[in-house]
Length: 496
Ligand code: ADP
Image (cartoon, rainbow, N blue to C red; front, side, top):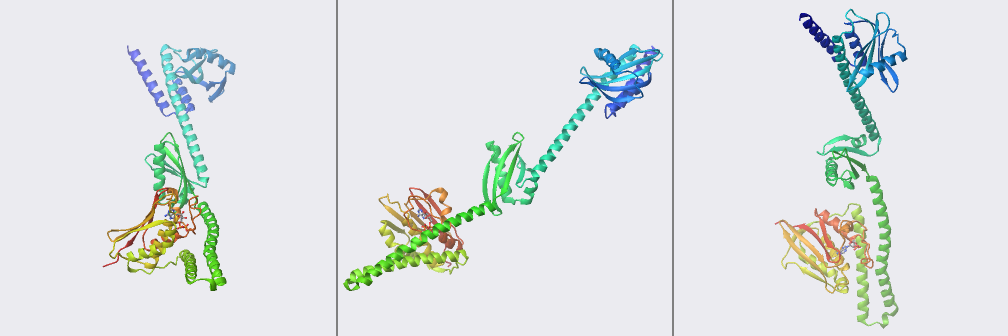
């Protein structure tokens, strides 16, 4: 009874000390040492070898002293031991024995300990066989853990290397790259992004792109102008809907170049236009003056008066064109100075209508003034506002729709708080949505069959906008092709 209690005790102590050794094992060599140490409690080990057999090769993990077996012998014993997948004990010669202790996990031999031992006095008992069976199983678990740990470490290392590689690649790019998660938080920015150092407005736009990309579930491409510059954006979804990569490029220079080319082209068109615009009144003046000069004696006073009237009208038109050019040059020099004062807007509008009389009569356009009889006092530059009104009424007449039977232009005055609203509406040819912004650009003229015949320089609206801006206000267009247009701006009411 006491004998068996002792034996259990020994069994437990041995297992506990083996477990302790294995707990601190960092690799297969440590495990082999622990096995040798625990076997040393029962046998005298003269030499040992620990190896892994894979792909028909032995891979030695640890070799202690000269291990006397040849490779072929080892393999024979190994095959025998393997068929049992448990510790085996083979007599060699005299009192020498070979212990084979495989470390087994889920039926797989992960490593094998070969020990060249002298038999102990008790021999290879049933108790030892059970205990060694446990060593075999337990060391198998620990080796597998170590293997797994190494694998995870290796894959973590590969991941880290990949991450560094990609970061290096992304950092070498000449475009800003950032990655945001689905909470719209930045998780990566490359070097170029930091160099660009986008301001809040751009960052907010990037966040919007991330939301749209995730919502639409596909990459987005866009271009946008900010105070900071002109940027192009491209986005792609990363990591199964979790993150979005946004590529941004500062294309201000390209856009500026495009803009300059466009302005250059517009200037060429402008020169052609203005030459034509100037030639028309000049030719008329010359033709009428020549006729008068050649046949003044034969002319009656009415004809003479009519001819002189035409010459005066054409001179006025010439003066208008030259004034427009002069204004444009002032505008370019930022020298369009205002002389604001209090004045009544009503007579100014009437005069603006009057100066377009010939044009609207010729085009058979009715100009309706929906304005009050009493004074509408504003604080602005009277001359400049009259110029704006002449221009807007002139455009509304010029771009009237020839196919409509009843063509009209309507000028309305309204009031909101401390401001007067001026609205010029027509039922003309209208302007397509994409042109609304462009028509205020200098030299810009809508290129269509409907506008082809209409004379103009493309400067009128640019000058009108500049004048309204100088008053601290905006000029807005609403228009539908085929229906008509409406230009609206506001002025401050006169004080008191
Ligand atoms: P333009 O000398 O060509 O009239 P503007 O700067 O006054 O130059 O106008 C720019 C362009 O805007 C015009 O060429 C025309 O195509 C368009 N436009 C301006 N006003 C109107 C309008 N009331 N209806 C339709 N198109 C208009």
